[in-house]
Image (cartoon, rainbow, N blue to C red; front, side, top):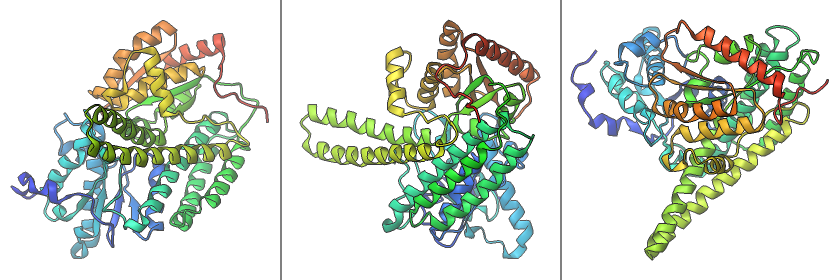
Length: 457
C-alpha cells in the first residue's frame, strides 16, 4: 500500500465525477444480476466496452479496508473492485494499466451512507500503488442521474432510454423467475431458463439498444414469458404471497441477503420483490416534486427568474417521468399477455397512500418512503406477509421497521425484519419458519384478495 496519497482530498474532486466513456473498460458492480448484465450490454451497444464485476468473492478484502461502521453494501462493492483489480494486475503483469478501467458507481443524496460510497472507495483505491489511476464514474440522484459529460450529447437521450428499458426488462424477468420457480415442473428448470434468457436478452440489447429498437426487445420479452409459463405445474396449490421491501442493494443482491427469496420459497412462499425501476421512477418523481415546491416558493416571492428556471426543470423531469411510466406499462402489458405478473407500483400512488395513512412523508426522502408505502400497497393487494430487508444499523431500514410494526400488528399481517451484515444469525431460520407459518395461516383465512392468482393452464 502507498502512504499519504489516500489522505489527499483533491483526489475526491479529480478521481470521481462524470468522466466521458471512451476506450476504457467500464466496470459495473453487480447489484441485481440481470439488470447489471443488460446495462453492460447497453453500454456495449453504444460502443463502450463494459463488463459486470464478479461479486462477493472479495468480501474479506472489503471488510479488511473498512471499519465495520460503513453500510454493508459498501463493504461488498469495495471488495469486488479491489479483488478484480488485484486479479487483473496478477494476470496481466507489466501490461496492466489501471487507466484502462472506469469504475461505475452511482450515488444518491439525502441522509444515507450510499452517497459516500464512492468518496470512501476513492480514498481506499488511492492507497494502493497504481489503483489511484482508476477513475470512478459517478452519476447522482441529485440531477436525476443525468448522463451529461458521460455520453456524447447527441447520444445521451438514446442511451438514457435504452438503459431505463434495460432496468424494466430486468425487473420483469426477475418477476417471471419468482412466478415460475415456486410452481416449476422440475426443480432447477426456472433458474436455468432465466439464466439462458438473460444471455439472449443481453445480446438483443447489445444489438438493438443504441438504435432504440424496442419493438424487437418487446417481441423477445413476450417470447420469453410465453416459454416461461410452460414450465409451471398448475396442479401445485397456490402459495402464500410475500412482498419484499427495503434497502435497494441488499434486497436485490442475492449473496448479501443469503438467498432470502429462495429460502422463503423453500418454506412455501411465492415472492415479489420491489423493483429497481421503482427506485428510478422515485428519483425522477422526487426531482419533479422538489422543483414544483421551489416553483411555488418563487411564485410567492415573485422571483420571475427562478420561476423560469424551475418551470424548465418541471417540464424536463415531468417529461422523463411520463416516458418512464409509459414505457414501463407498455413492457408489463406485453409480458403479461399469457402469464400474470405483478405490475409495478406507481410512485404518485405510493405518496397518496402515505398521506392517507399519515404515518410518514415524502418530504423526508430516502427509501423509507418507498418501503412504508409499498408495504401498505402490498396489504391492500392481499399479500399474506411482508419482509423488510436492510443493512445492519441502516437508518432508513430501522425507521421503516419502527413505523410499520405497529401497523402490521393492528392489521394482523405477518411481518419480518431481516437485517444483514455478512454474518449468519443463529435464529434466522427459526424466524423465517415462524413467519412463513403465520403467512400460511393468513392465506388459509383470507386467501389472496386482489393479489396474483395462479391461473389454470
